[in-house]
Image (tube, rainbow, N blue to C red):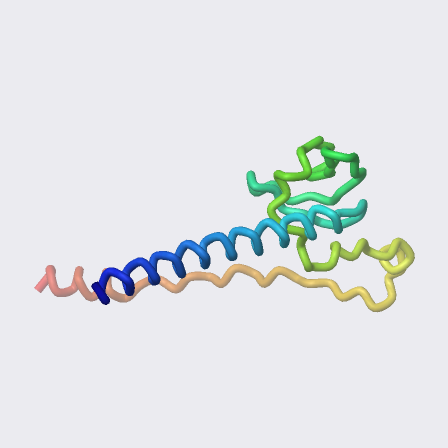
Length: 125
């Protein structure tokens, strides 16, 4: 009798825990969906990484690899926390001051192997 009560109690706690974690997950998804704004970088469920161009009631237009894609808001997996890439300064790129050049090292000349000559001399003997 006591074992049965314990079993039903454990099952009730498990079901409560499942519902609670599901509610928490839904709440986090709604908060993320509400925080979406143009300029944010996102990752979709399909693994596409892009920057949000415009936000509609249910759809989002993202720019990725030079193309624009319209997706459903619910398909956004996460809003990324990393900073957008810094674009190079045009003035710094045109001036020669402070720019270091890298010279490719010359290919080392290969010395002939002494193994073959040693093997030939052993065969000759």
